[in-house]
Image (cartoon, rainbow, N blue to C red; front, side, top):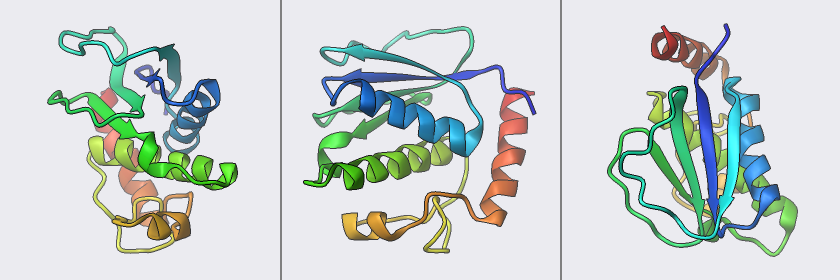
Length: 149
């Protein structure tokens, strides 16, 4: 399945290019969707943001930021911070994929090793897997087909 729509990933003072590329890698590995990345010094006004090939706009930020647009997703990376860099990047990978999955219609999964398992606390996020279970993978493919057709 070829997906021509893209996820645009913007980092607003949220840790630089490694953070951007981890989020983009998470999206590509989990969903097969290409990303375009950009680093900004602050979150711009997102009203009226338009790209002809936009599937979703993912904004990584250090500050709480509210937005009420269907295609705009916010990840507050500050809450994912950890003294060990590999834990932080693992959390970012999982959280980014989970948020995108929910935005395309994937439900939270009840399997703790599935990437779509709903977590409330960071230790739970640390324990969950980095891949979709078979059921969620099949549902993801159906949802993506409906979004791009």
